[in-house]
Length: 40
Image (cartoon, rainbow, N blue to C red):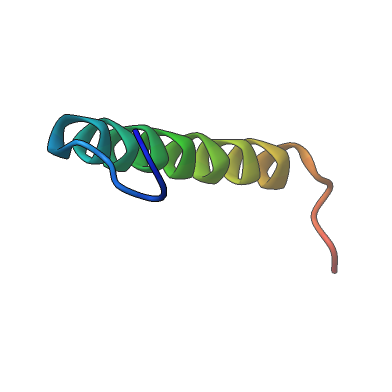
């Protein structure tokens, strides 16, 4: 493939993988926040 041209299948897979990555990032932040001591 030349340049930035992608097949439609590749774009769909990239979209799915980016969503999964976003969900994992959110889960990590929530997990860390729940483990942190409460600030008063």
